[in-house]
Length: 361
Image 1 (tube, rainbow, N blue to C red):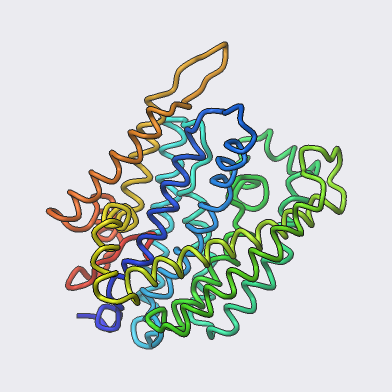
Image 2 (cartoon, helix red, strand yellow):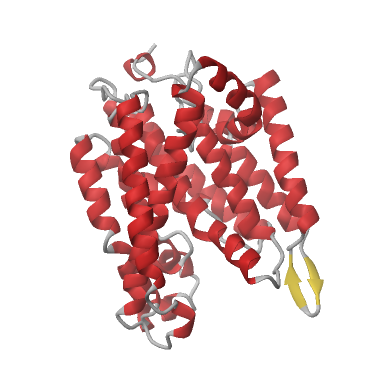
């Protein structure tokens, strides 16, 4: 067995649960129909940005885990980087294949994930404090830069070419890498700081609460992007404040799931583990669940009132319940998810004892 496999932490159900909740949030963002109630519309709008950032946060935690957790590996670093790079290239290719063959009516996360993982390779073993400081510092400015960049004439011109995906990767899409990498750095730092420690989890919850309670209210004091004709100072500033606050919400979710499933009293852990097991199972095989959901919503496309749509409350309910049932049964009887298994094999990763997935946490 390789040094990488020997030093690998076990699966952490709390992180898988957080990722499962991010998947459910994405389902809501993708297919929830428009509603007339302002309160309901605002609630659904919350699922647009926060699940994405929660996904990035758990991806960073996953990178921390597969590189040794609180005791980063020394031997086998080049091999691990090679395996991650192979997975990244495959994810990029899979994203393009889905886009070309299915054309879902949503932004596809997979290719951006692959690019972000490649960017993270040289940062994989920096010290936890440096990862946290760099991630938080960049997150204060990169959302603003992405907002400004997306509104430039150059990006608009690129988006009219076959290389549109390049601008989407960097600044123009729903998942700009310059925003995702800082969030992943924060997640990487968390994995290095021992998420089995009540003290660390408490600090994560405290930091997330502080960020959410400070930055989100501040962002509401600025004009919303849709009411600002030009990319004035308020638009990029609001983008950075909202991203910082929403990342704080992600930290709260991770801390809450870790508390319920890892740190609570045994009786509470048993009940929470039973109730959340379908969500944990989804987070255990995110690549499979996410890809299947893209296939389903692509097949559900239809034309209404002259517009192509896939929105449906029935479809949303089917996605959530169907994904939970599928993931729970597959994990119980077959183990690792089908696409996770294939990606692991393709990257040449040791299959001996580790329960891992490409979007691992």
